[in-house]
Image (tube, rainbow, N blue to C red; front, side):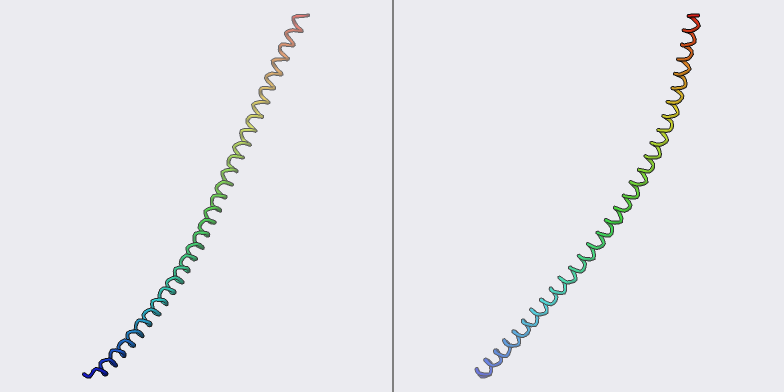
Length: 110
């Protein structure tokens, strides 16, 4: 093969190789861009799901706390009623004791 033809084929092959390299670099850039876009979509979906889960758990915790508060308040009300009743019985007993003592003192003086 004569030298000019070999040079021409080499130049042609170099041109083809350059086109293949450029196409491969473009494909790689597009693939990376698509992967980044998909990763951003996945990240956004995960963040949205995490936010929703956090809100659901907060709501459940609020409901649980409200129910526990209601239970505590009901128990406190019951304790208050028992304390009032016991105090009333103690007042009645104290009045009876004071009256009995008063009667004894009056009886002793007469």
